[in-house]
Amino acid sequence: MNWRPSDELGRLLNGLADGVLGDEEEARLAQILRGDAAARRHYRQFMTLHAGLMWDYAAAAGAPSEEQPDRSSTAQPRRFRVAAAILAAAAVVATLFATRDRSTHELVTLDSVTGAVSWSGNAGELRAGLQAEASLHEGSLTLEGDGATAQMHFRDGTIIGLSGEAELAFADNGQKRLVLKRGTISAHVKPQPSGSPMRIRTPTAEIEVVGTVFNLAARPADTWLKVDEGAVRFKRLSDGHVIDVPAQSTALASLNTAQHLSAVTTPRPLHEWSYDFASSIPPERWRGVWHSSPEGGRMLATAYVARRNPDGTTITHFGVSIRTAELNPPVALTAREDSIIHYRLKQDSPAPLQLMLLTSDGKGGYGGNFECTLPADRLHPDSSGWCTVEIPLSQFAPADPRPSSIRKHPTPVGNILTSVLISSYRQDTRLTVSSFQLLAPSSR
Image (cartoon, rainbow, N blue to C red):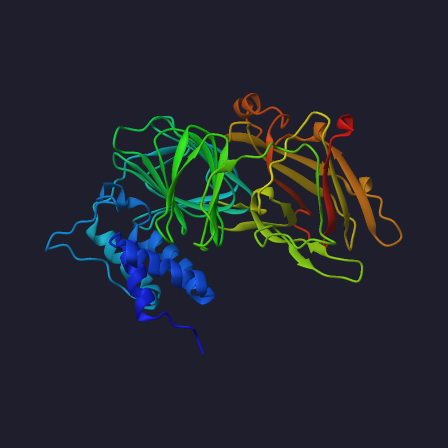
């Protein structure tokens, strides 16, 4: 039998979405979520739906702030049941499209694009196979596949970078409003107009930014924030708890309201690190499928969208990714001149491999993507099919061939590795990885 939310939970969630809960009601909601796993799952679905539909894909930039709801006698609070809203999603969106005056002026320009990146507008427009220098008006940017990245800038110079599987809606009608439904962004926000801070919402948190440099990750059950410069106001949506996160600090807002919401000093990046799939189960958002074997755990490559053509057709690769920001607590890896990427892996049939490094600069901004190809004859499996692969950082070249991009990001040295991806291109060779290491020989 399917779990159904109680009338009380539905009422409290609607009140939370409308911004009209009192202190006692917020405490009651926190109590329910703390003690009921099914209620927490329902909350996550509700807030994802609310971010997508009731925020109108971030087009609510011109609407009153949630902190100042319209309490006039003519105001109609948004009351709906989640199940009905899910079934009627298309109708709700159509109504929003019909009743809202859409802004069609260009808001952002893409600086760089890697992999499958598409844009959808609020009136049904769709553009696939986006390239650098494309200009976009308000809507949603979607990245498919672990190797996908995009960097865009607003007209005031604010820069937003996305990487991996991600979806970000954006609008700016005098105040920037973004909805990060999933994935990770880096941001370098220019000083915003007085009284109109940038707001970014995820299914579990909301941040308020006047001007700063930070990274934000919307994960299935929480939101992770790392501030590099300035300060960010961080709100946990499950109970409305708000903190200020200063520079060089991180914070985590989860569904568990019993978990203390606080800012902690960001750990220093590591230049050596290892992950052994034989003894550790990776986060679910890493590319690949973990499975056990008599020798220990293994990570089997899975299909992902490497590129989407303008006509919507896709090119598929098969890979395994390492995304340290998805760990709890997250880990940052620094690329040094003497760094070596080390894998232990096997394939059912010999095939070349592609390695890709997605990076950010030392201040949280976009650092460039870099790639390296390993010919099949460089792989020397033993009698059981396993081989050890070591790739010096010097063998990675910029993935973006444009001269302007190469001048900006000539090398990964000094950058943070946000993702390391190994794939067998379009051929499924049942690539299997048992361990990953980042080595720095000169530090020993």
